[in-house]
Image 1 (cartoon, rainbow, N blue to C red):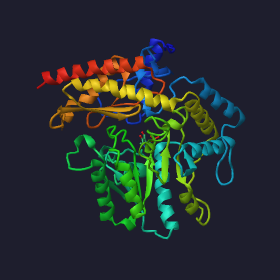
Image 2 (cartoon, rainbow, N blue to C red; image 1 turned 60 degrees about the horizontal axis):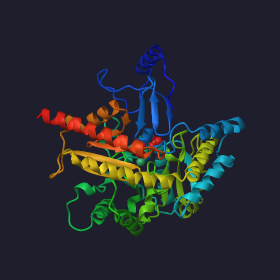
Image 3 (tube, rainbow, N blue to C red; image 1 turned 45 degrees about the vertical axis):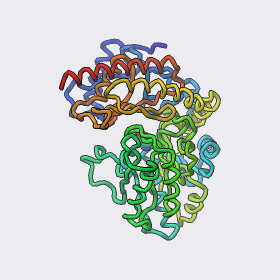
Image 4 (tube, protein in one colour; image 1 turned 45 degrees about the horizontal axis):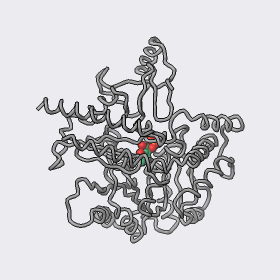
Length: 459
Ligand SMILES: Cc1ncc(COP(=O)(O)O)c(C=O)c1O
């Protein structure tokens, strides 16, 4: 299906207004005019996006790792319209409630790993992360250990960009200019199996490195550890299989709450409903967002175990944490319908199956000298570009290799995402076909070849 084109005049009018009036998220403000691609997307269908000029692209990142059921789902539009016609919004403060939010909370309890039974709703992943950190601190105050305030997160983890989440995020480029960060956030190393050269189990070594941070801070000062099961924006890094079981043991040993940030990995992205299921690990809190509605409306939340919830019930007076849009009925109605699509169309199983095919096809790109690593889990994949495959030495940052590959692929109608550390990220919609995967791989193949040649020519 081809999307509706805008006329040339309409496109140029929109481009100009965009430049003048919109401060874009993650906008490249310092970039000279014309050096960043500007695209106005007009429509989408399945794994394809169409821009204002009628050009089609394979949406290899499911937009922002979130449009999991694919674009153009009339069922989701109808779920939103039907709820809006009945009741678009009403307060969820205190004892006020709505059927879609109640039903969705119950459905999530059914889908999430065993003990996670209670949901707090928010709108975005960062809000949900901040909520989890606040709950962790409150939990310890209610348990009589008020000095447990520190939140340990990990280097390269991304948790969003509100102040709490920015402070937890383990990437300094997101701190720069916005300091001081919120107090009480400590950063520990995270697994990097590609570069691990130690002896013995890499998972155990990385779990111990995190425990060292706990011990240094003093376990009695730590409230929680937050971790992405598979690091997304930090480089699509899959941990060794024994890492999370060991991390769970460390948390239990020191009495720390384990918060799983499943904002990217939740709802099937890795081929299981939730990624920690791969390693049979139980979190005390689970943060979700993106895939709960496949991005059709903003919705996020934190799931709590019954034990954490029981402790919160001891709070004297109200639980003084609420957003206007917590439990937004229309967003929850869309969430419910989206989960039904995932179930009816067996899309989690499909993500596992298409994921295996994508991972297998991407391995072929190792034939390029600058491809150091190809990795991933399910429909979440990353390609790391390096100067030297033997030493794993990174490319000169000024070469901007991943960015160049991204631009070359974009020219050919395939959208991936360049990340810091010269990693190309992919996380297409679960409805992507084998043919579209083949096209993604072919386009990446020629884009990498082109950049490899340019880099050689420039030395
Ligand atoms: C793992 C993870 N956590 C949290 C967030 C923040 O979500 P949001 O941008 O909705 O605030 C993201 C966003 O990409 C994410 O990838």
